Image (cartoon, rainbow over all chains, first blue to last red; front, side, top):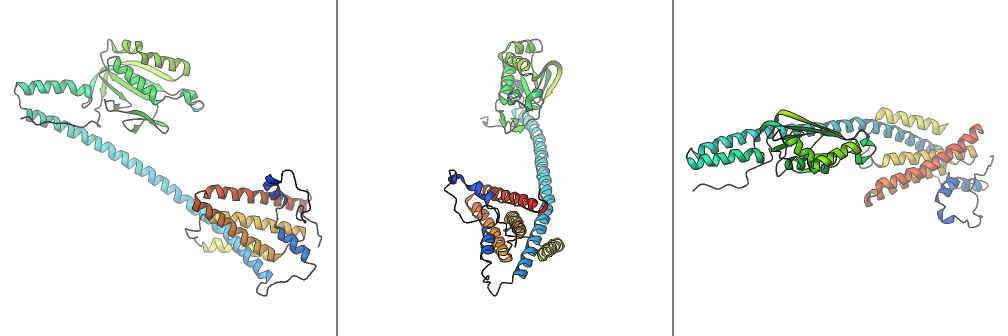
Length: 284
Length: 110
């Protein structure tokens, strides 16, 4: 018995320390081994009273066995559950992708059904004078409302986060920036606007959700491509003069965001599949 | 010698048999392992100090593991399980490091 007394395991005779109320870490450091070891070692002078059922050697062996088994089982458990987590993740990704595919299929079906509704409506209206004027009205309103795909000349504006966006959140394109841009295009006389292929209608929301900007509740990935169809002679100039044009040239100059405006002759914008007939009236 | 053989035999047993831990006990296994490591290092240091006692070791190991698991269990019931297990790991980790340093000093005198 070399009897080297571990620090701090002796009887508590120290004076009340100044930092006694914040003694937790000190105590952990001072008393790293179970104080019972020291106590039993001090008692060792007297014969140790040991219960009959406890045989030290076997108990020790059993505990050592248990600890070893715990290590092995713990490690095995972790390595076994890692691939399971991976599978779960890929499964979730699969499900998301399947849902997106289904959504796309449904959108295509909506387009088909809308076209069918159009033909049926034409057949139902017949071809007298009122019907023709009604159809003319429908024909002129549909492109503006956004229920049919439209083609024509217009502007393509491609905007993107600044290169420093990862460092400074202010250098990222916000939903507000896209809203300003879309509103500016409407003011400049655009007849149809789409962002990344999502046609804007009176019911389209441009919002941010989490890290992404959503249009029609579908999240966009940057860069954002805003297409607008309008009068090719005036659209670009009126847009540049609008407050949105000023807003964006400011963002491009001061925040170094990507901002490119181009005239394009043949743009095709899809219909907004989110629109539905909300009110109908039978012809008496 | 006995504990070393026991430890190796335990690891072998665990690897060979691969017993699966019941789902209920799974969150407590890592904490129990950290508590076991703390008991092991404490015992080794006590051994080097010449005051090792197998009975104290067995009792301290079992109580450490049970208390650590119980703390995490209670934490889980009141909604601070992960924070409490972090706390347990920090405290036991400090003890393990202190003991490891003492063991190193005793073994290598450095």
